[in-house]
Length: 484
Image (cartoon, rainbow, N blue to C red; front, side, top):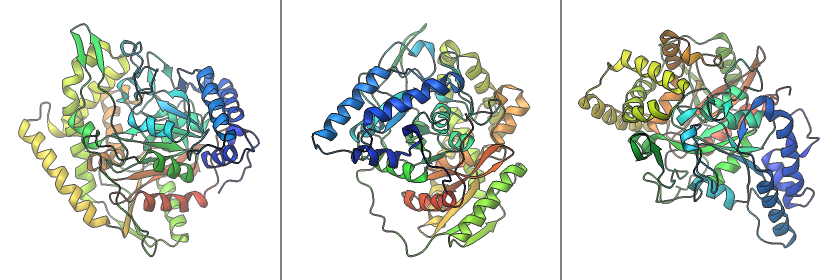
């Protein structure tokens, strides 16, 4: 439910913008100039985008207008301004990861997901900020500074795609590219009141050219751990569900350079009726904040109005186990990179990782054995099968995004106790990636001045069913726009 009409081009949704450019009621150049003006007005405060190159973006917009005028075939995102994340390769721009030592080498080619956006006609407009190495639920680093939440500067915009989400909420671009291995698309989208979808592993190519870094110990390749290959995904963030659906369609280009890429997407005809929605409010480890319960209640009411049958369950053990396994596999895969982080990472990421390792050690011990690690991968496979059998095409899960509202800035650095609380609160963000299922976060309510969202989880390659349910919630929720 959108109660406002756009008065400036930057306020258009991606679907609206693409249609206006295609129909020649708005030029791509006018659209990009409007977004650049908006960025000039709000980015100095929010600090969502870095490495802005207006001349480059305007040149791309003029080329888009030339193609429109010439009657050439136009892509579905023709002329639509889109941000890309600082940890993702974009030709001619450094993939800095928020680290000074990585900021000097421009990428020679686009990552596959960026190439897909560019090929669909998107105008790449700015690089979105993230924490160093993208390993925090906050978006601050020594290279590009701190990104603020447009709703409340004392709260995190989320991480790691916090700049992407904050830029969307503040009106800088209609679309943003992000990636997710522990909530890095879904959590920032929720914190900033926009939509984020994490696709099924393999649907959107995760391929990028090998990267190297010069360290005091010599030149080292940035390795891709097994969890990154098997659990990390690229995906879109957007202001609306329809925009997220369009961007996901564009990015879903099978690519066998990706170690887990699928050769072709399965044909998924829609089922006869809306899926059953099973509500999992908690896994019994941490209570939900009242604002979180309010968002779940609102989402349940709206989905019921849309015709979904609702079932409430008292926890779901497989999600609890998946969240625990995430803290084993992710951190053990990252452990060999810690010397490099100590050498070139900023103090924030070093401290955050130290405290996160300590929280994981409370579950798995300070030095999990190889047998424990191998058993974690084995249990992961069993849980994937179990969840797919539960969901099929007839069921979705509805969960919180987190047990807490958006965290206070730098909460992960406050103390070992607070860091452990964050890890516990983020069980919905951790359980999904380790299993590789699609999930979306969508705003459901505004509580105490902050957007509050819910997470929807579907069976593998059932993104359309997840987005259909998200659309039902969005249709019954006033559009949430921060006052900037």
